[in-house]
Length: 138
Image (tube, rainbow, N blue to C red; front, side, top):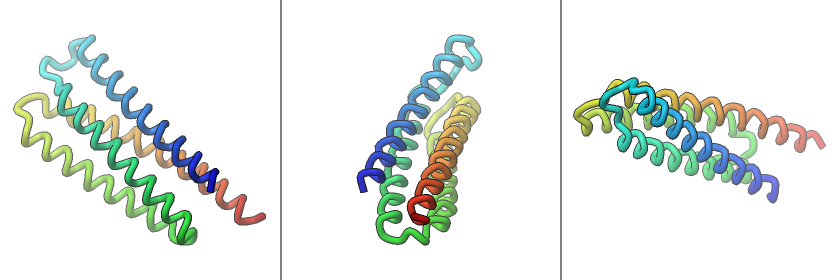
């Protein structure tokens, strides 16, 4: 159980760090190089926070699945990806309706963050699955 708690903490720390660093790089890069005159700093910050909240909830559900039903993890991965995509689309549509300018900049920036979270999560879960398989063989 201690290993699961360490893995959860590592996931949360890494995901928060990745999203915050991604947000900072995208925002600073866009503003520094003046790529978009109306870059949506606040909407992207809100989207980043909501993405962090979603990822924390997803890892908590994953930990519960590992503790209770180890055989049903593949459907969880697939369902998580689908729910994440629907969440991201709803977030993009909601923020696009609320903001007056910078919609294209927001969508591109959010897509970069979304892609980063997908890649980070996939690598993390592949690593965890390998460890779980090694433990189950012993």
